[in-house]
Length: 283
Image (cartoon, rainbow, N blue to C red; front, side):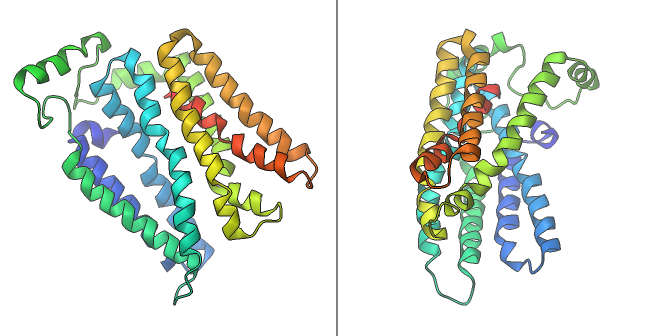
């Protein structure tokens, strides 16, 4: 966040995405669990900077009452990508080459991430003032409409008094607690759903394909719920609560249902990402 505030955000976003891709692509070089621990640490470290930067971008282009929907537009991609990535990984899983199939998955994912990081450098505008394709009048309108935010479009100064104000704000700590607890649920959602599904008797590769409905559900919810928050401002807290209850219901079904009820267990896996829609609104 500090780097994105201090330097052009397009360059920072590009650099972090490229480093993220490099960290991803070197995964096959890890030969023991210590190496994987270190790799996963740096993978999470670089990934953690992406969402805050996207929030800064939305905040510099849109008014507060417009931001909920725009957050959902980019965040829903984390769900919809799970429709397509299982297809890619399913195909890569059938490769019988010099490397294990899972290594090809990381090599391809890392290469795509690096290429996208390079593209970001050229296509992401740093702010409305320096965006290409705007004339002077359009730049003025883009900046003038942001006055209601009382934040401007770019500020490169680090203000200690704002940090103190943040740390003493009860609403910040409530929001922090909600986000932190949401991320606890995010572990099994983003990482373990294929493993959970394979535990129902499906092969590992077929389990990847069965993740696709969960991606479709997650992406749609992450787009629909922020839209409802945008359309009906007073519903925001209720929407977050209902999304969290959806994930809680899914967890209870996975815990309590008999192992033989495969259809119901798959349904629970598919609604497990509900909390992500509430997190999109929370941002």
